[in-house]
Image (cartoon, rainbow, N blue to C red; front, side):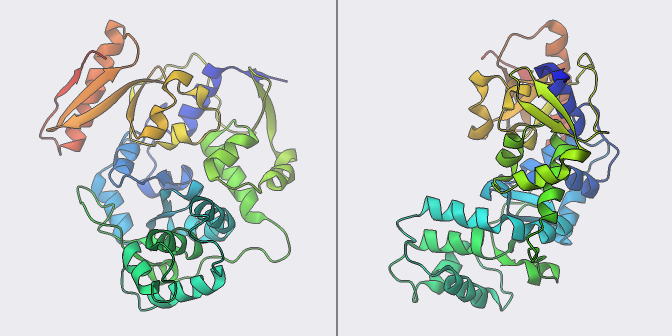
Length: 364
C-alpha cells in the first residue's frame, strides 16, 4: 500500500484547498468546493477567498450573502460557517443531533430537565413573524416560560442547535460591523431544510464524506469527524469504501481518497499564502501535522492569522493602520523573505482597497 509522507499530504491539501495555485472558480463555486468557510470572525472569509481565487472582489461575496445564495450559520463543530444555500438546506438536519449534543454538553447543569421539543416550538413561535432578532432577544422572549434558566444557555440552545437559522446581513458583509441577528432559514431562503432520510439510509452522510475528501483528502476517518463534528459517519464511509482508494501515512494510519483526487508530486513548488483566522485548511483535520508543526498547533485555535511558506505554517500576520506585519516562526531564507513581503504587499492592497502596500517582516 502506498505511503504518503507529510510533504505529499501537504501538497495534496494545498491542491484541494485551492492554495497551490489560485483558481478561476467563481466565488460561489469555491464556497461549494470548500464545503463552506469557517466564519466566526466575519471578515476572515474574504481573505480566505482572496488567497484562493485569481479574480476575487469582496463585493462578490457581500452580494452572495445579501442575496441569500451564501448563508452564515452554525454547522460544522457548532461553529459559524459560510455555506451555500443549497448545502445548508441539504446538510442541516444531518448535523442537528451533534449541534444539540454540543450545546447540552456546554450547559449541562443550566439546561437539565428542559423539554427540547417544547423549547424548539416556543422558539419557532418567537421567530415566526420574520423579524430579525439577536440571540439575547430570543432568550428574553422565552424567559417568562423558563425563568430559572440562564438566558445565554437558553438562547444558544435555540439559535445554535434547535432551530435552523441564518445570521442576517449586514453582518458578514465587506468592511461592515454589525451584530448577529437571526431569522429562520425557511423564512430567509424560502424553503424548509431537507428532512432526514426516513428509511435508515444516509445519503447526506455519504455526500459529506465524498465532498470532504474532494476538498481535504487524502484523509483518515478521524479527520472527517474532526472537520464535521458528526460522529455517525463510519457507515457512510463503509458504504463508499469500494469507490475510494486507500493509502497509509507515515504513522500507518489508513487514509481514504477519491480515485481522481489531485495528489501532486511532493516536490511541487508551493507559493506563499496568507491565511485568515481559523482557516479550514488547518482546522479541517484531526491530524494537522501535514500543514502545521505540533509546537505551533495552538495558533490554529487561538485565532492567529498565519502565513504558509513552502506549504507550511511559518509565520503569523497582523494588520494595523493598513500595514501588514509578519512575524516568522522560523528563520527565512533571503528568497523566502522576499516572497513573503511581496505577498504581504498584495494582502495590504486588498485589505486597504489599494490605498496601502505596506508590509514588513519583524523579529519574532
